[in-house]
Image (cartoon, rainbow, N blue to C red; front, side, top):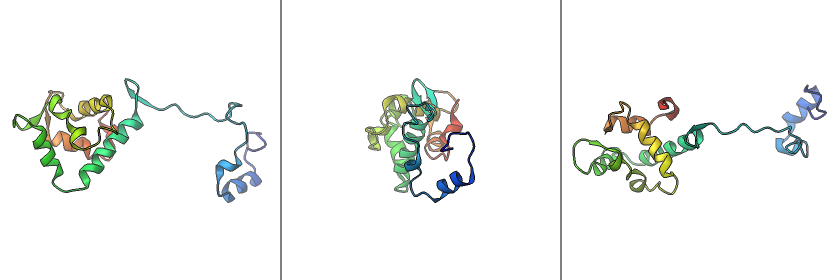
Amino acid sequence: MSDRDGEIDYAEFAKILSTDDIVSIKVAGAAEQGLVVKAPPKVYKDGITVDEMVRAQSKLKEWFCEENGRFRRVFRAMDDDHNGYVDRMELRTLTTRTNTAHIIRPQVQELLIDLMDLDNDGRILYNEFVKVVMADDVTEFFR
């Protein structure tokens, strides 16, 4: 491809495999010539990318995994009226309680709350909360 004929010959293939820094063999000016096309970030909703949602959920998961017992303790602390579930207002304290407010924007937190309300009843039960925070792939909850 270095000769831009649209095919990779053996010499070009060998050069790619043997380099320590593949960026160093990039053609100078390729981006300016329109040869390098970056895929636009996939937008989830309201200008928030899928990557940002995944990063936010990952940060929460990481925080909760650091210590056993954090889930119940934090969930109970958010449940101000002790009714066994948290509503949106109570759940908005999550990033403050987990010290992730500087990482997770309020708009992203709102969308995570939307994901946690699995049955759309306005109440987030403990199992709904844990299911989203601990998901291996939070995108499976995107509606």
